[in-house]
Figure 1: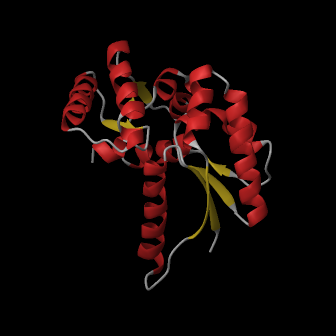
Figure 2: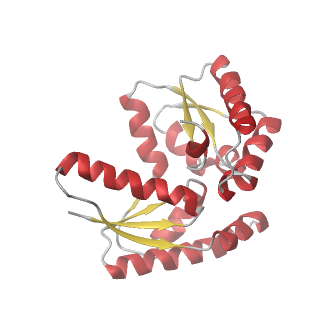
Amino acid sequence: MKTVGLIGGMSWESTVTYYRIVNEVVKEQLGGLHSAKVLLYSVDFQEIEACQANGDWDKSAEILGTAAQNLEKAGADFIVICTNTMHKVVPQIQQKISIPIIHIAEATAEKLKENGIKRVALLGTKYTMKEDFYKAKLIINKIDVLIPNEEDMEIINHIIYHELCLGIISEESRNKYIKIIGKLKEKGAQGVILGCTEIGLLIG
């Protein structure tokens, strides 16, 4: 069995989801008492969020690059970054290690193609929705990407950082997200990417 190196803590609430799913899949495929071989390096999200807010992506890449190096030294066979937004710095992290990083957008593109989805709505932090580091991986796979308007993007981003990352689950916020998804469906979205793991805490 391969050893998975998880870089988590962004936020820790969503990291729990990754750990659970990895173990569920191993149990499903191998049966019995099998569980995943996992190494988890959990960073301080306060530091990472400060880098995001200040546009200091190089510093965040250094922090996560160090985490990846430590996981490789500890015996990880590959790296999974337990956050969508920080895939922005995957190229810088990959330069620091010899083991591969599984890119979340590439894995998502494969799943979308399996399901015949050619036009998809993307929700996430404002960085994930606005910038190309995630969307480009979908577009190269000939998948059209729809994002919310500016006002809706601010609503989504605010709820992520001020509620979901703090473990606050609100019915009012759930309804706001569902309304935004409805608008994107009207524009032709065949599916929706919950491109921030915390959103999965709010919407099933």
